[in-house]
Length: 566
Image 1 (cartoon, rainbow, N blue to C red):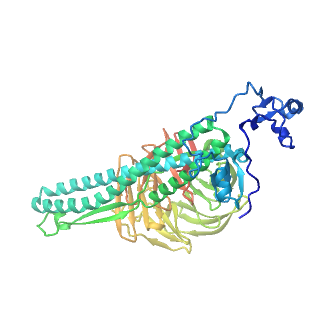
Image 2 (spheres, rainbow, N blue to C red):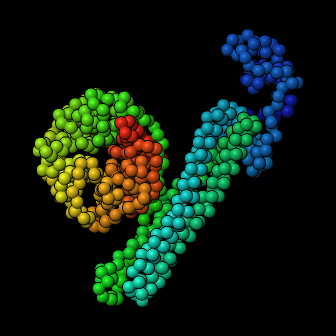
């Protein structure tokens, strides 16, 4: 370690009454007559006269030493600015060991360290205070999320348990003895598992409440010390509480990352459902841990009136997505145009396409797939485009398709999930090698007209999602596990566009309720985001899951909005 670069001064309290400017040139005994409040400097008559002659220093507040407003040295620091070992005021900061220290500490344990006076470091107080306050605010948000998740986890589990118990009770009417036996077994086994989870959640809730209270206490204290404390006190407070806040943040993040809940399933025996004959096994159940999904908050980043971006006809963005470099791509069905925009939704380029496009999805390396589905003219095809850095594009491949496709999403690097129009298969897999494969959906077969359904996928979870506008439903199918979920909720009415984060949070455009509804990959509705009178039509999420792009309309007024996901 480097040697300490100064010697400890032992001076009287009257030292501060001498001219600070003269001290800097070695004259330590010149009595100060004035005090500059702006510079926080004592000055003699000569230095004060020179101070007044400098144009850039005009407007400074100068007081007589006798009339000088003193800084509140008695601000209650609760002992955090005093040395724990010697109970002396900490006037120094050890850069080597990142800690406050007093004169005794410097002489006894920090002689080989890089040590400086606190007063030399207070110039960064404002910046450090902002950073610490920002971290505290982030910590309070994390603590609130953890508290909310803990409480909601217990509540949802109890509600799920009660809902399933009610389902059991419906069957009980026709199979009283078997149902009563199963109900007792179900309640006992699930209650034990749920109680374990709830105990953990309650512990985390209590811990997060304590941490949240600590954050509020620290925040209040930091506000007070920022207003009333000396620069040294502010620095001491920042140093001490930065470490505490860091520990709290680590604890909160660790708690959030380790949260889990249960997925409780019931699979009633087919014989019982049909109520044909008695059976010894009326149902099967499973209790498994699943990730906790919290609703994501939407914060507006940019919003543009699409009508103001009109080309020839009134624009209508039937397809939107994010390119790999975070530019925005949109296909304008009414003007047969592919529009490229930046992160603030300013138009960077417009590129005409030969036919009216339906949807677009971004592949790797700024490649975009665009669907065209004019079934009547038998001109249904998919084209691949390269979007250049100058915001123009080139067609690199076009191939005709047997089916007419509306929405597109990327399953993997060479396969798309494509939602069909007027076809007995609601969706198909389309490879970039021009192969079209049927998907064996476990849902009732249905033919969808243009705009009545859209699809997306969650590759990491092997889940396909299909919206059904007429039925007010969303279908989730786990291809790998061959399990399906039908999502029905009063918040989901006339669903249209749909997209999903890589972790599995699904965003559905509920046009009749004028909202974006969030669904977990297990089919639980997490919440909804209201859009006033606008009907959401198209939606896309960025590759890093941090931004959401939305096209919405209200009569003839249309908007494109970019949200930050929190």
